[in-house]
Image (tube, rainbow, N blue to C red; front, top):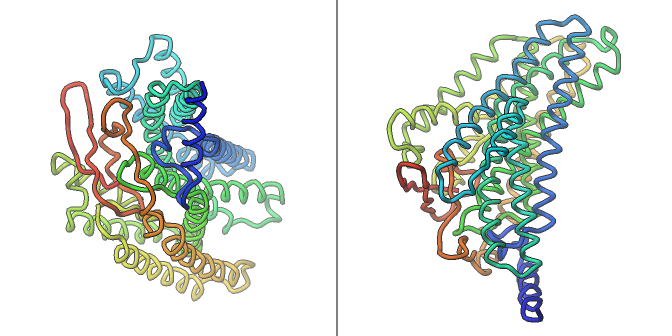
Length: 436
């Protein structure tokens, strides 16, 4: 018993050494309070955002704005159905995966029931939390084998829920944010009352936070499951979240201001940006490493290019400095044109005529400052951080990696040494190079 207590004390001491303190996978396989916090926060932001979207749709219905009501419901339901279908597909593939525990008949009934209720991401969050808490219990009991096994399963589920949440962000939160801000720019407070305006405004804030949280969670989770990379610290996660809140906020404000005057021309701007990103991805063969055939590469390029309308996610293992510079130059060039055209043609008597433009430029400036601060002081690959201890093997019995679904090779904001991820499926073993 004393030996076990000594091992646990040493593990805790190890975690406090060095600036990269958040989440070494596997943190000596210790599931900590900060990991529970990220799961609970993810669930909370999902429900808060979803709840305000439903409340917003209800308010549109009560005021007789049926066009806004139908669009709001459409942006709620379609992404939810897609996420549930993807989650079910992953469950079916996992059934024959030797790296994950087999689900009982009762568990399958619960899964199908929850998916019918459109609770796919929440189900993954709960599974991840359950495995993590069991791993933590076995850590306290000194059972290292079970501790590591449940920690590995936790990482697998965590990777799935991060991907599902990323889908939700750009399929639901981003379009919802643009739509509701657009509606706010058209209506007058006197027509609908303060309560309606407050609900719509809070809904926009929750969508923005949810969007930024999804990108941040993907950045953190991508490193969390990669054995060759240090992880993002708690302070770094906060800076990363604020960076995306301000940068995405600036982008959305420019789009909303432009749409308030030019209406459907916004779709032309978005399509042009999307097409440019597709050409960029295909010309560089950015996703060839993640796909076994050309059709898959084209499809994934189409999807990722849509994400690039709002935010940048690193798709290929290589230095990101010049890609970030190019991306933000292109985006801000588009933003400035949209804001300038709006200032020229919009009514100067609008209450948000000057504040809207000022907010855009201030928000973008703060986003860039936070990005520079993150890479200067909080990025986990800075020399003083990477000199710390490296991550231990993930498996309790042999060196390996967390199994991933085929979409997981799309990396986040970090660019480090490549990792070969074993994808163990029912009928084949496929190795792909993933820049997580």
